[in-house]
Image (cartoon, rainbow, N blue to C red; front, side, top):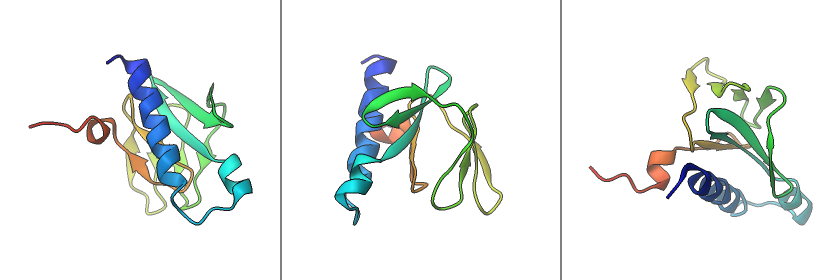
Length: 103
C-alpha cells in the first residue's frame, strides 16, 4: 500500500473516530483533521485534503504547526510522522497503530 492510500485511510479513520462523539449535524459537516503526508501537513476540510496554511489550535489546547510539530497544553512537544493524523479535538492517531504494527 502506498503513502497516499495510507494517508487517505488515516484521514478517514480520524473522521470516523470524530463522528462517534456527541456532535450535531452541523458539527459533523465542519469536521477537520490534520495529517502529515509526504513531509507536508495537510488538512481534511469539508471532505478535501488541502495544505495547512497556518498553525492550528485543537479544542484541547494542542497547537499543530505547519511543519508537523505539536505543542501540547502541558508543554510536551512532539513531531508528527508521515501518516500520523490529529483530530481537532486533539486526539492523535499514529500511522503505525493504524497499520496494525506487527512485532
